[in-house]
Amino acid sequence: PHPHIGLGTVTYLFEGAIHHKDSLGNALDIEPGAVNWMVAGKGITHSERVPEYLQHVGGKPLSGLQTWLALPEDKEDIAPAFHHIGKQDLPIIEGDGIEVRLILGDAFGASSPVPLPSETLYTDVHLAPLTDFELPKNHEDRGIYVISGEVSVGDDVYGPGQMLIFKPGGAPVVRAGMTATHLMLFGGATMTGRRHIWWNFVSSSEEKIEHAKQEWLKGQKAGGDFSGTMFDLPIEDDEEFIPITT
Image 1 (cartoon, rainbow, N blue to C red):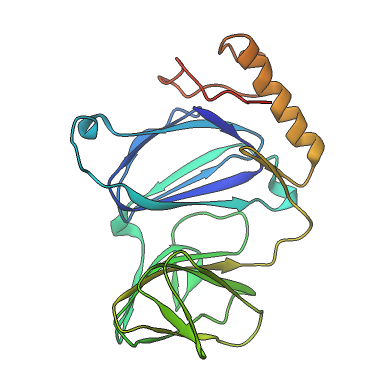
Image 2: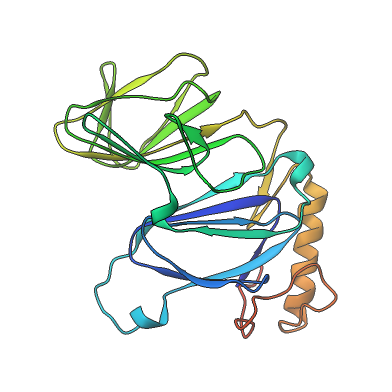
């Protein structure tokens, strides 16, 4: 178990499974194609563990991404929330050599059912070899992250683990390489103001981050007793926690 403030986490898997528990009482397995959207707001704790049914199964791969979204300044202190949307409830858009699963936001004429505090775009994209993919025009900020295969933009080629951020405006086109390509497309409204990050805490205010740090330290010094602090440990997973190292 560990804490967060001021952000939302999007957990999305390609293979394997993670068991999620949080201080709101949610407990479930995250599996490929589904999305976990956890809004930390003013403060939440959660744990992410290997599900019990996989703990004694060797060689099971785990692959996926957890993306952190900074909340809008006027929503940094909202009540924490959690939403789990199954694979079957996320829209799929298909075209010539293109398959897009819409995780968050609006794109290509479809909308994800995940509730959001601000304009956001997040999709899982598979491209057949040599397929052109035009990024949607309805978001100011857009980028892609290459999972496998490669893409070209003009004469430049990018491979796995590389992220491309595009300037606002227009409709950039990326082309898949000679093999099938898997990428994530993300973006949304331009973030206003600076954000600070320290450990698991994100905020427009360094003072709020320091306060969260001191609150976690109180529980840490009390041996895991977080009563009287801004945090609670996850229900049925309160026997241990990740300490702050100062």
